[in-house]
Length: 336
Image 1: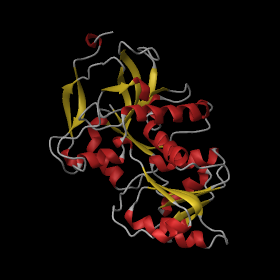
Image 2: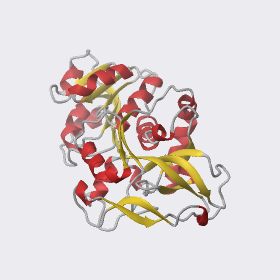
Image 3: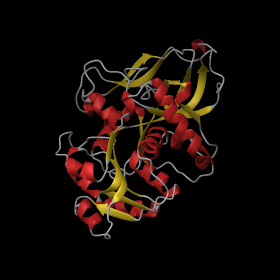
Image 4: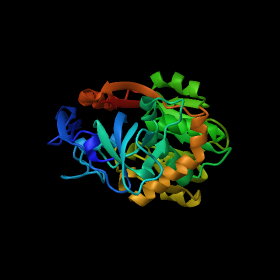
C-alpha cells in the first residue's frame, strides 16, 4: 500500500506559540509518511496526557518533538491503513492501540510497530485509546521499577487519573496486600468500587498521618507519586524498610527536602521515570513487558479502560482545560 491510498493532508491540532489551551488550533497539515518499521493508523481516538500540557506550555524547550512528530498526542487507537516494508505483525484493516512519538492529535498517526498492540475483540476503538499510555506507564512504575510483589502494600497518589486508575486495577489483580489511594473526596466512591482498601481525601487528611495510625507496622512498600516536591518527605516517612518510591510526575513542584537518614536506615529506593526520555528500544521493551503480562487479562475483561469524557478533535482546547481542572476520573479522549 502507498500513501496514495490515504489523503496527502489531514486535520490535526497544532500550535505555533507556547501558552494556554487557547494556543491550540484545528488545522490542515501533511499526512505522515510510512517508514520501514511503521504503521499508519486512521485514528479513532487519542488520549490526553500531562505531557501534552507540558509541551503546549513550553516546558520541553523551544523546538521539542516526541520522536516522530511535532504534534501532541502520545497514545492512540484505530485502524491500520498502511504498513512499512519491514512490518509483518500487522496489516491494513487491523485494529491497534499503542504509544506514538507524538502526532496523536490528528486524523492519521504514525506509530512504530514495536509500540503497537492488537485491540481485544470486546473493546471498542475509542475505549482502546484509554489503555496504552495509562496502563503501560502504570505497569512500568508498579512492577518493573517498583517491584511490587503479592501481599505488599501500595500507595497510589492521584488515583483518579488515567495512570492512577490503571495502577489501581493492576495492583488489585496482582494481589497486592493492601491498595491505598489519595484523591479528592468526590472520586473516593469510584475508587472503592474498583476495590481499593483505603481511599484518603488528600484535601481533608494528611496521608502520612492516616498511614501512621493504621497499625504498629504502618506504612507501605511501594508508592506511585505524580505530585513531587510537596509530598516527598511525607512519602519517605510512609515507606516501610526496603520500600520504593517511584516518581512519575512533579505536578506540585520539583524542589523538596529529603530526609536522607530515613533513606539510609530504612534502605529505601527512589526512582524516577518518564516515557518521553527513554529510547525507542527501551519503549519497545516497556510495551512488550506490559503486553506479555497483561494482554491476556485485557482479553478476558479483567482489566477495563476507564473513560471520563470524550471531545471532538476540534475541541482539543476545551479538552485540555477539562484535564487541567483535575476533576476527571479516568482518561479524557479526543475523537477525530
